[in-house]
Amino acid sequence: MIERRLGKSGIQITEIGLGTNYVGGHGLYQAVDENEGLRLVRQALDEGINFFDAADAYGEGRCEELLGKALAGRAIVLATKGGIVAGKRLDDPLRYNNDPAYLRAALEASLRRLARDHVDLYYIHRCDGRTPPEEAFGALLRFKQEGLIRAAGVSNFTPAQIRAAMKAGPIDAVQARYNLFQREVERETLPLCEENGIAFIPWGPLAFGLLGGRYARDFKLAAGDWRARTGLFDAAVFDRNLDVVERMKAIASEKNTAPALLAIRWLLCRPAVASVIAGAKNADQVRQNALAQFLELTPQDNAAIAALTA
Image 1 (cartoon, rainbow, N blue to C red):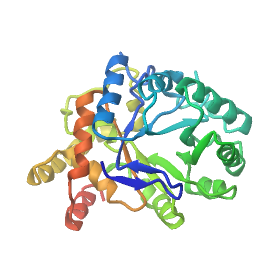
Image 2: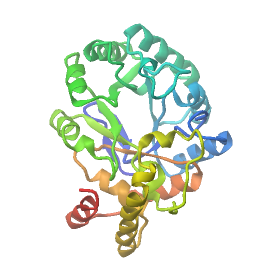
Image 3: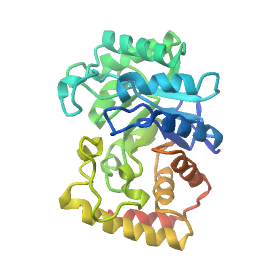
Image 4: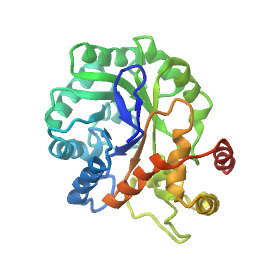
């Protein structure tokens, strides 16, 4: 699989990565099948994917436990995140903690679950609004010096918070939500990353399943599904979003491909994007997403796709 450099870190990651919030992601999805989670990890390995993205908040550590077993002895690039306090609601601002002592304890706990002496990339999952970003990110740079992590990043930080974190030292990667429907990062974050040689890693690249093109007009999320918090499935916008998906299907049909692959490849053509961590709930979705590496888009193709939600 084609690889790109992770910022200035020297680490090489595959263009297509695997987002693992379904792997042991109890509390994020209903009826999580751990065996299927392990199958999709094995499928990713079979496809040549070397970049796996996790977090201690996924299943309150269960994701990391399963990955630790599934990836043992594998030559892969593993990213995880800390800074979310387990057991509180996603919309509760008090659930975030960027205090350096907390981040150290969180990293050490992640390493135990992953059964590793270091992780390749460690992110602050979200800014807590209390700890100065430069103080929090400074802790990650110390972890890097100690050999506990190879690269340091921030996730879901605003441009101002990214700039503040950069006062402590260079950032290797920034992760934030980015897909054809949700393009806020284009205003400041992507230019900031490009200017400073920071790898940008989009999460939610398929708009949480919408851009896969499988949902009908009467689709309803199950109660408790975390995707209800994205806003994309709200009744006021859902039909309009499906109209865009229908137009994506038409473009995909002309290129003899699938809308999901168009969405992934379009992101890989954007400035500073190093890898797309497409999530999956079954092994076949992993196999399909990996095909995006073979898709070629012309500048006209990219412009046509972008115009759908300009």
